[in-house]
Length: 186
Image (cartoon, rainbow, N blue to C red; front, side, top):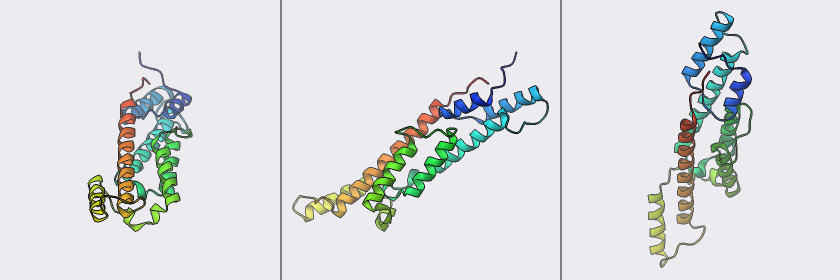
């Protein structure tokens, strides 16, 4: 005996919980719908709904992955808002929770806006922790062992910290989402 066809509400609930759909799940739902309703897929039916969420989830993940190599200091409000919009759609209209990737990007973008970081052409370059450490060392040597708050070296250190935090957050979020994606019984 085969499993039953999930309802649209069940599919939406799964998406709103952040559970990613796989191509196999979408195919299985389409197959069950065809077995149940005859050939073809019903507009607005479970297969179309599952396919729509799969597409939205993949779009969100692709766009979020593109930001992995973007320095935190270069994240703009527009980029963060775009990712928030995509994640909201992937979650079935639910606003992403505090601590989610898009809310973290929003916080970074808000900070950058307050600091004016995204207008700084130097922030567009990828700054590593090693680059920042060298700049801190050079400045400390130059100024008798101290690095002034707000100096170029301390700004580079801040950019490197934000970049590393963004990379870690993105990596953790994508790994968690992949790990939490458990095939559900359709």
